[in-house]
Image (cartoon, rainbow, N blue to C red):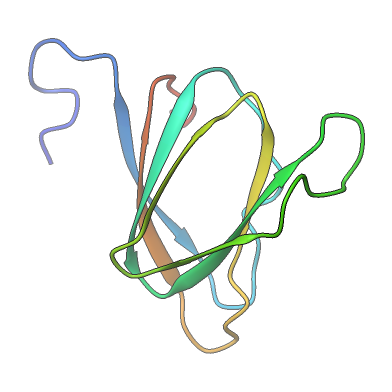
Length: 98
């Protein structure tokens, strides 16, 4: 509730929900990002620039897990659970959401 109301800081913090069985879509932007899982589970995919092949096996993030990565790498979160939304906090060094 205080985001944007306090002075200073270059970090953008946004709660995100990926609906049951859905994907965030593949995104790429400047900066760095930290994900902090608060509910459910996602598979985090990191892609090579020129094609939709993952650079590694997906990271499985569950409640309480975190991931830190450069967002210049194309990335996508997938919620494979058909019955539960996945919720996480995104803390990033560049503002992406309005």
